[in-house]
Amino acid sequence: MKIVVCAKFVPDATADRRFRSEDNTVDRAGVDGLLSELDEYAVETALTVKESGDGEVTILTVGPEQAADAVKKGLQMGADAGVHVVDDAIHGSDAVATSLILSKALAKLDADLVVFGMGSTDGGMGVVPAMVSERLGLPAVTLGSEVTVDGQTVRIRRDGDTASETIEGTLPLVLSVSDQANEPRYPSFKGIMAAKKKPVETWSLADLELTADQVGGSSAWTEVVEVTARPPRSAGTIVTDEDGSGAAELVEFLSTNKFL
Image (cartoon, rainbow, N blue to C red; front, top):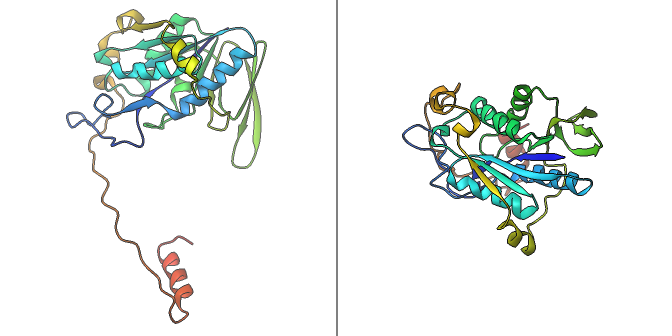
């Protein structure tokens, strides 16, 4: 079974994230970045499927030169190979263009099972798995909090606010998992050393038979027109209870601010 995990390189959420002044896109090259935390659950799912049967896991990412670190992390966790799609023309691509690039790469990889996380920690849209499944003409089972693969059948449990449902599909398909699906493993020393010898291919748009006018900011359906820094945090309200009126003041404060 050919399993491909679509992994994203994102700015570190604990670092100083910022936008590029020239086009208001997220600065991915000038800040510290890493494999999206939510995609680690996808990598773990793929590795578990591989270990329970026969197959190989490839990490696929689209992004700038630094995005190679996302592939490296997946390889250190136990994936077998990596593919990095990098091209200057990709900068500024939205979800629509990203799904196009991924679908072309996945078709070239001839994937049986495509695994996504539930979203990215920078964009948080969560729509790319469905877009990719539509472009590839494959079924999608998404937001799985529990995943079972039995032969050609993939079954998930999807947990909602009021109920859980079981959904299944037949390979080949697109799968996405939530952050409840598993506990991602930490790369071992052996895994870190082994990752250095694993094959990683670098593809351009031309390798996917795509042109610059099909992707990038110029063809994006959405645009960030303005960015404003978050204002500094203001001082809170202190409620004292010297005369026994503190509880009433607290209730009044919560009511006035519609917290109740």
